Image 1 (cartoon, one colour):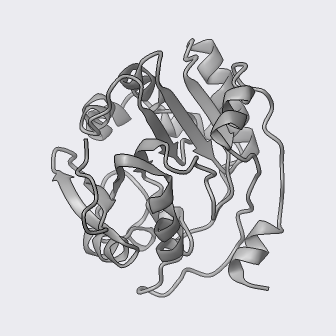
Image 2 (cartoon, helix red, strand yellow):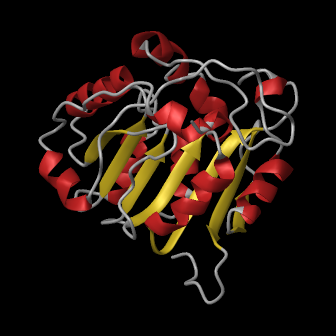
Length: 252
């Protein structure tokens, strides 16, 4: 069995109704499933597999870290979301949404006519996302339970994909991002925000990080071009990619 087959067969779950939005999910063609977190040795340095595998199945515990107000100082969530160039009515996907740190910012950016797909492969995390969205009145936030190798994004519909502190958790990245080009709406982009590969006062240990140059190289091999780069984050690179196909529409 292939690596993808092993992960796909390992564990499944069902997403409970969230915010009464399941009919919209069906309209967009979003699937609902769960993924496993296999335990394995760290990949080789030139591998396109995740640098670490561990579960995020205790959302209350992780919320103390992910939603610590001190994070705002260096993560700059308002500035980060503003830099995505979202407009009212757009569809934004937060890939690896975790406890929903970015969701309120994304929700305001796309407005009532837009939609935020908060995607995570942990069933308990998705339940937490749904409860948080309801409590905060974020009616345009739809939690989605994805697979590690498929976030179930609707083809040709997504305007912006945010991948914050998550890229290094993804396996088979060349194949994964090669397929992701199909989900973008015309002018759509993918933003990768992750930690520089050096000792820092926050974030994972250096061996779990990926150098900026490796991310750019992998994305180019997967059929993307570096369309923009933001430098206002103190500990992270902020790379914005667009499909590299000739004649493609410029990011809007």
